Image (cartoon, rainbow, N blue to C red; front, side, top):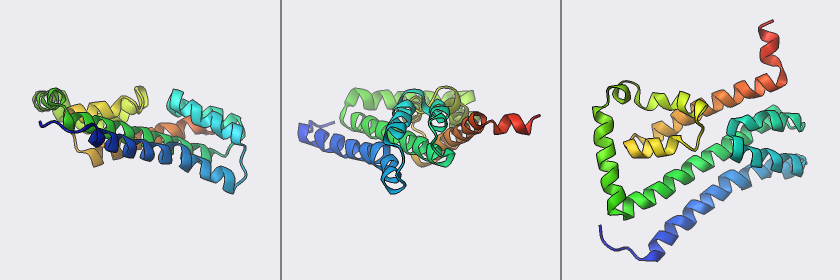
Length: 178
């Protein structure tokens, strides 16, 4: 690894922050102004999503927001956080010899693991449901799994649990099983 000027790191960091801002702040706020939604309710939902992830669905629905809008906000924020984490990790992995060596060793260990070989990326679906979207990108990054398929897998699990949580919040699931 050669020495890279600080401006190179800053360039990657600024691009990551812009993508993060667009996905997690700008996209959720656009419908607020188009459909004249309650700004405090939406900001509460957004903040809750950063803190309790899909657990924010009942909060948004309880504040009178449309369930579809709530799911939209949850998806925007999860996608933004996941991509931001990948960008930050990639910057470290690309510019740090220690991190690069760690990745190589971790990838080799992952290939030797029978459990990871059998379930691999599909294990991200229950992982995101149990541990959340902050945990999955580091797992993907450390094991060197395919990024596109991993993001799709993480979001499949996240969207599924978000919809189930929203349905529970609206009482629909309870009605179905009576």
